Length: 399
Ligand code: MTE
Image 1 (tube, rainbow, N blue to C red):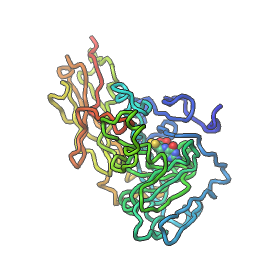
Image 2 (image 1 turned 135 degrees about the vertical axis):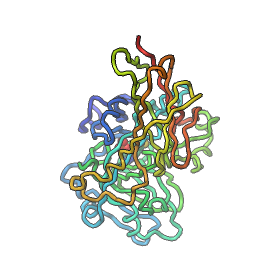
Image 3 (image 1 turned 90 degrees about the vertical axis):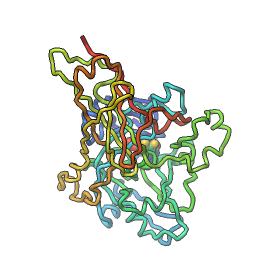
Image 4 (image 1 turned 180 degrees about the vertical axis):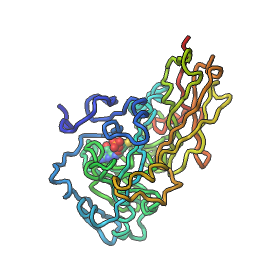
């Protein structure tokens, strides 16, 4: 029995940190087979502690405060949020900054647990644009950051972090306060009844079970903001990082935007490809994403360890979902977003028998519209975050 015994969970999810807290990803191919939107049952979960319990009858009375450097501090209930503000629905991919950390841990153990490449998921989130709420609170001139705090009480206080105020005030960045996923009430593991969703940035900024927005002139001093979600310089060892606080207080090392990343879902690692008697080509497939609303503009595949590359086809499923069934999702998908990408995309490439014969492995790399490209080499860091070198699977041809 754990503090979360009341929370329903899908047995297909792979547990990454023992019984409690709950940190899970789906098997990579099952996640990929779900398609663009991940069902709530297979959506990855990253919990630092126990899931706060909320009774059904109390959901609409859940409230949060907007406080700090504002002229008009507010306490807003979920009922008010749903009735007094415009509602929007956006497709958004959330990605844990630890996605693909397992590969780092295999090179050298980091302080984090071993995510495979399925530490990401996509949903249609419904809620209110954060900028609307913050504008009504009237931030003061010197305000620079928005700190967020959840209701989960952890060994080092409530979970919390911060983002820049000018990002939060920009409606095109799509920061939102969400209470629905894929048209349903949020599940307990994903923040029931209210969470922040910060598109294009690491999942750690999307605070669940949201209780406070605090407008400040400094980044959050919450323990989880300081000691989590950072890429420290590569030479900083676990011992050095433990002994020297300067690494944790410098906000330049905090991660916000995601960087370009991709994975091969088919073939699976160590898969034997069977091309005899069947089709004469193999279609390799996978996903790619970048951060900050930047579109993935190319995905390349190599069968000779990066000497030569072939261009893969890319499907931007997100674009289709902008036109999704409007009745079902509240009729409010924002059309201003046509060129902004806050979701993963899918790539595929048809490979011939000749190309595949003799190949021992397959690499993929993605590039975004700012020409940020995945590096060949891993950048190891003590928390093992933002791992994004070329993704590799080993393969063999059967027969
Ligand atoms: N918010 C609270 N209150 N508590 C948490 O433990 N984990 C963060 C973020 N928000 C967390 C939180 C991290 S590290 C990630 S990656 C995302 O939630 C995961 O969101 P999900 O579990 O809905 O996929």
